Amino acid sequence: MRWASPATKAFLALVVLISWANAQAYFGTLDAQLAACGSDNFITVGCIQNFLTLFSTTYFRFSPVSYDAAGPQRSFPDYDPGTNYNNTVTPLSCARVCRGFGYKYTAVRDNNCNCGMQLPSTATTDGTCNVPCAGDRNQFCGGGNDAQIYLDPTFAEVIPITPLNTLLAGTYTYLGCYNIPNGFPTQDNRANSLVGSIDICFQTCAGLGLPLVYGSPQPSGQVQCICGTGFGYQNYRVDPQLLAQPGDCAVDCTVFGGAGGNCDPSTGARCCGQQNSYPVYISPEFQGCYSPQIPGFKTSVTQTVYECYDLPPLQRWPPKVLTLPGTYNPALTISSTPALYHPLSVNSVAGGRVYYIYGCYGTNPTDEGGLTGVFNIVTSFVSLGVTPATLEGCATLCDSLNYDAFGMVNGV
Image (cartoon, rainbow, N blue to C red; front, side, top):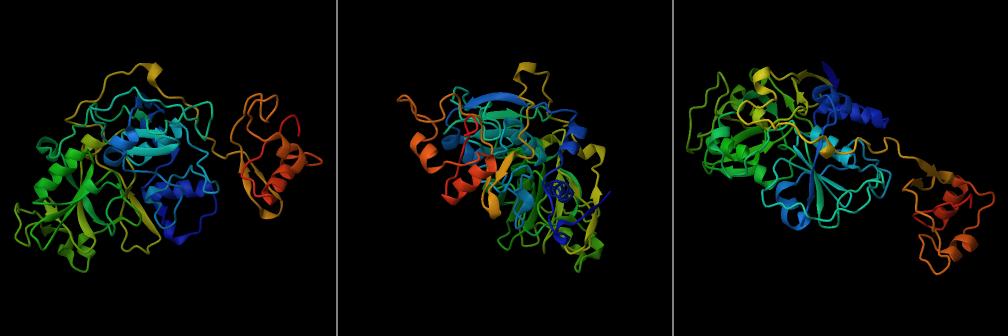
């Protein structure tokens, strides 16, 4: 299949953004996920206590963002960039995006969405997750310090947490030569480290539970080791023979005198790379039912199309060494209610703010009878009288007075 390169076109609509993100491999379409996995079968793990202070900075570094043209490798296409808060967040929308980036776990805390590959055994599920979701206030999206955790049950039952994993290091096989100017978009400093040899690099990435790895020899004799779950912006596969220096994608990792040689240029085994051209290795042990798209061949970053690359069976999910989980209690499956794809909105006149629906606020929206409400009754009925009362008219007046929110009660 051939894909258009996003660098060559202007973004015209959200639908276009989603399809291009799929083409560039940093986020797949929902259709691609459902085709690969069959359903949304994410499992509730529980509300993890002290997530923000104990686990977020180590195990859940990857944080999707609204579309960013300068760095779309972290872009979550379902986010609406026109709001001050992410009004698309629900457990399902976050789980889908983490799956789209190749991660096993989803953490939802205070309407923030983070992804990770491992959950430590010290995590306790007695936290408090009572913050309403911005995408659906009938659901909860974590707490102030605690996070609701979900997992993709198509990953291995347990991905071992260990600094070096010798057993699973041997499951990486050569994927191809890739142009990678800026590493993989993991946001995890453990996934970019100086190690003593290419063998320790494989062991390090296996210890982190990450399916992709490559290395680069350093003048110190060490190897710069890079791990990840998927490719990033402007990465593409190259034919080593077409490089200005064909050997750049099959450099002996001991070229500067380090330990552990035996690079095999004919198969790519145990080789390093340089000049942005690297032999990438992949392991099915750390993949789920959906893996981020693997970019195929291009001759330069400016080429407008490239071929997608389909993984051979031995490099694809399911894992061959680790064990897949048994059946889960259906009651643990998270709500299938997604975020609003196109959030209901009201535009103020003359190009002012766009107000997005945030939810229904009970029976006492204003201050009446000594009870505290959402809106101040004096301000609402004196300063903000609108005739005739319409959503657009209310939005326009509130915009002119610099209010961030408005509501209507019984047509007023």
